Image (cartoon, rainbow, N blue to C red; front, side):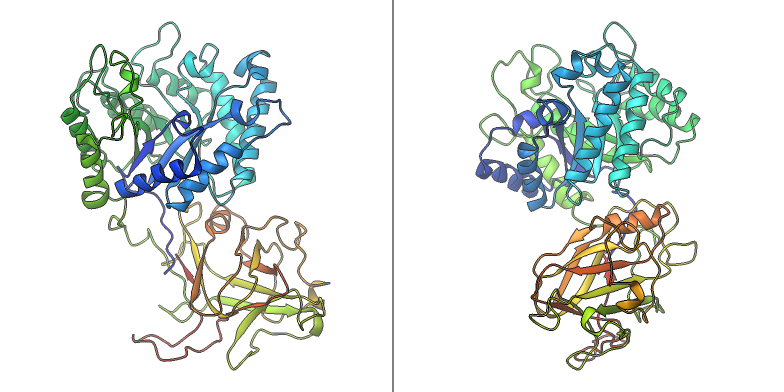
Length: 535
């Protein structure tokens, strides 16, 4: 069943794992770590997408290899990635850093390239890490310069992927401005003063509280600052409905001063979750970090992990896992409101808005809106139809009435976190590339009425495919991630459905909305196949 969820549940647990702790590992070791993340119940991994790693050779050089390996491991275990874009290359630092407009443009170009490269694999992007600290901004932090960077990156990313979700830089919980840092609340206030509103989908913040517990009311407690100053600033600037994503949270179990016990670390996870689930505005919590670095026990930075340097599990590991797999929302839906999920299925709950057909080069004037193949209606996608001719058969599919204000529709401007398309296969084949249609069509459309079939030229259909299915089986169902398409429509693009363009000469058939079920369904619903569904 296809589902559209509008937001992750409050307090959903992730991990903030520094990329440096993953680099250099073999594929086997990296997969082993992500396998343990899955065992823990990790829903998200937030990590560094270092600009200086990808573009160390200059503005025209790109090396994605290490990030590709990490993203592949996360995707393998169904763990969503929050990509933190930061880390200035030497050629940026030597030319004025992030104070220079040309360097802000270079960063936006990097962000766009990242969104394009990881399309369909990464949808959540964070614009810098702790930009209120000189340590990470590399020059004296300035909210005006950062806001220019945020706005440019947001525009670039969403131009490449309209379904992308942008998080502002996770602010360090500095309580005041002094020397090499700007207080978190003051920095956020200055961001709004410089026009940041509308350039992010969530505010990023790091509500560290150690050695205090999160519920301590001390004014320098990072969690207390989030509940008061951060939220008050957002509300005052019209962002009451914008969530706060806690992209780092944690506490060290060793260190020269202020270290906490392993049990207190576990209690901190539990209390953070308990508090966050009571806030409508809370996003996920990314726990920093998975594993202790080990080494000097006087350096607190080495001891934030859920497991020790040799893999031994701390009390916090069990606390995290218990929340994620039993108490928390990581693996089960948190009883969403009726509008949180929407399903569109032909013939179910009164929905009758499915429109589908195919166009065939070999019979260029024929209409197939109600045609039958092998005794039931199907859509055939083939680069050689009939075999050996090189003549194409292309498909068209649209769900009309998706977006609107009516009951069961997706609201205009909704944030789509997951959308899937389920098709019933009837003949195995090479699959298809799905391009959003940009021009109108009907079930009477033919090859010739389109000119010469469907052209992915940016006018008739989008030049870039939203997804490529790969080989498909001859029976059962296949479900495809179409989040980017549905997000584009919810964000204002016209919904003309998809063009299915063939990937090879071994044709793939799936059942159309006119098809009949091979046997009656065991429910009091019409026996309609295929059950095109959103999930």
